[in-house]
Image (tube, rainbow, N blue to C red; front, side, top):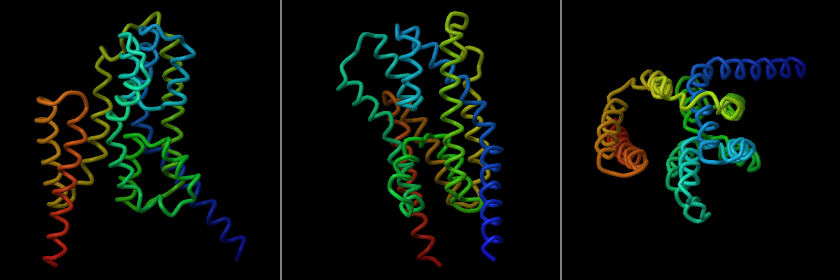
Length: 241
């Protein structure tokens, strides 16, 4: 009986890892050009190759790295303003973390902290999609997160190596790969009226906010408004039942 349980546990673990590898492959293809661009931008901003690579290793936050590199290239070196700007850009992680908290709160704190470091937009999108399709899986989230991390670091290294030959890989139009991938993950989740309403509200608010607000505030505002309205609609739906 014990042997049977062990084998069953190993088979389940292997299946979750395999599914994670299969489902994160399209997302990885979208991450690569951004990682390469990050490596090239670091060199353009007069950072050394090692500094640029270490930034991806220890920061691992694409948007924040792009903004940080841009600020450094412009001569802004104050740690206070760099940290504040990074905090504002990454406020959306509070929303993503809150969404996963009911599942991760049961895990040991060291594992929570470890997985929090690897939380990115892409890892969150894949993990929450997996939750909606089946259930929450620690091996799935860990596999997706670590693969994305390794690809990001390797892509940054590639950008550093190719920095003298490629001026800006995003001019090839590869930046469209990431939003297209997110749409592929999102559309199957729009299975009921409330999801469609929340989706429409988030889309409209983000577009309007992007036109009138600086930086990435449109992401935070769209998330907050859509989440609030979605919560109210869910509450009304439960009362109606």
